[in-house]
Picture 1: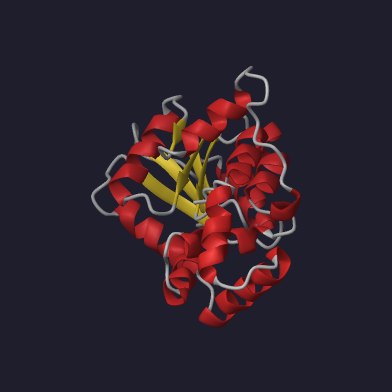
Picture 2: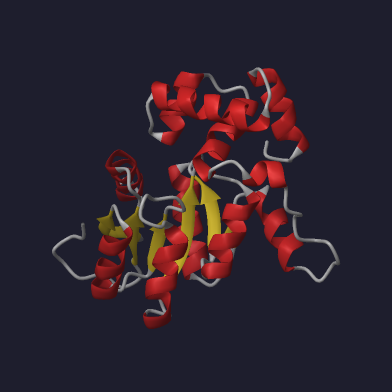
Amino acid sequence: MSDPQDAATPDGTISVFLVDDHGLFRAGVRAELDRGVPDVEVVGEAGSVDEAVAAIRHLRPDVVLLDVHMPDGGGAEVLRRIRPECPDVVFLALSVSDAAEDVIAVIRAGARGYVTKTISGRDLADAVRRVHGGDAVFSPRLAGFVLDVFSDRPGAAPPGDPELDLLTRRERDVLRLLARGYAYKEIAGELFISVKTVETHVSSVLRKTQLSNRYELSRWASDRRLV
């Protein structure tokens, strides 16, 4: 849903559009950017790919903060549909996922940077300024993924893993947080899902990997550089 206004902002102010399927998260980001960041103004938001495409086409914001995973396609789909006709709009991925495949997919699609949702409000505002100014911006450990994949070094791209490919993206998100020592309740809070859903994903991962407990899962995830 976009605001009933265009993206016109005072001179020197960067107009920002939020794309995320979680309304509570969008509200939090808006509050952070609206509080004490006079040169950044949120001009609209959307919770689905279709809403995002229509609103970005209409508002033409300076920067779009783009979630990577949404039920109807996610950030890469938004980029695929709108970037060719809005080449001046800059896209910055803002996601809970720090998986290499997610970073690479959205950068290949045209995002100018990728930061995780653990970023502070101040750092997010700075990231918005930097991508608007032409820089590429990444959370620290994510830059290595991009450098590896887009370098000319033979074998730089991460190899495929048949076992890892069995997991859905959401299962990987749950596994990554589990391997970092998060409790089920904390994982639920980070991913905006219920504890019951976390339990379901963990059970599915255990079944697919043929492992028996979270400690084995943590080691399995670490071996595959998911942590």
